[in-house]
Image (cartoon, rainbow, N blue to C red; front, side, top):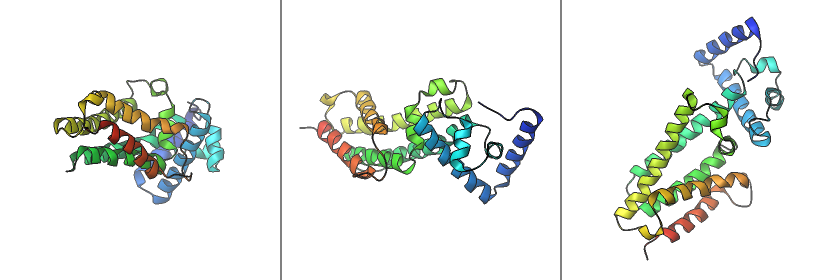
Amino acid sequence: MTKVPGAKSSLIAQRRGQARRSGDKDYQQRQAKLLKAAAKVFQEKGYRAAKIDDIAKAVGIDRASLYYYTSGKEELFQEAVREAALQNVRMVEEIRDEPGAPDDKLERFIVAVMQSYEEHYPYLFAYVQEDMAQIAGKRTRWAKEMSELSQRFNNALLSIIEEGYERGELDPAAGSPQVIALGVIGMCNWSHRWFKPGGAQSAATIGRSFARMVRDGLRRR
């Protein structure tokens, strides 16, 4: 990760820390704009090929000013996806805990995931596209946090499917809950190859189409 060298780097880091602690709304808005621009660069070029100069150019500031808001492209990428991933986990856990039929919960889950990809485009797609084990070691705090969020997300979906099997509303002959859960997640994640907001079909429409396929395949005959 490229950094501003020497004492100047330390001074900028101190100023950055003070600005973040201050809660200044203008600073937060400019930082959010930077995150969005960075995520788009990552999506277009890939994490490894993206350069800090590309991000500075995309947001319309010089390289030195960029370090007032971030320590580098690794931090930008991590911050861009963390909040979106956390929101998704809370979403699926809320759906899991709601009353209702499991197949209805599955539909709400799939539609909500696709809408999240649309809402956070291209943050989450940039994350899905990359092999995160190659970006941050598994022992880093961020990698551990993302691993924990991923496990919570998967477990909540798994619980919805297991509930459907236990209540006799979903057909166990369709496959194990683990395989079904991984298939649903994979189907949604693969949309990073072709989905873009503003297309002929909205994320919600695509999500309902996916959900219909899953529900028809799992429904007990």
